[in-house]
Image 1: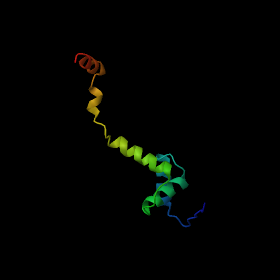
Image 2: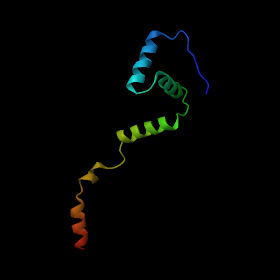
Image 3: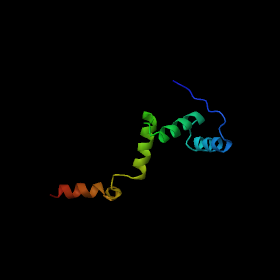
Image 4: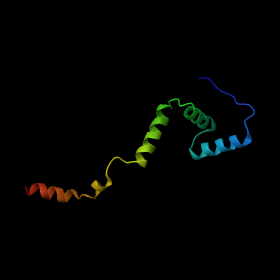
Length: 82
């Protein structure tokens, strides 16, 4: 796998990268790759795509939460009474 060395990186950018990597539980190198991939609109790795998809799903659940209010016992009784 190729590597990249960045010289004369401004201190504030380095600190921001460090903070974001810590927040996202990634190494500095992993965070840099993710940010570069997003900036270049390149596809992320399978693991990162899966993580982003799970985050999207958790923020916008497709399941109507009202179905969890249904009592299965009542449904069974109703079905038996038919």
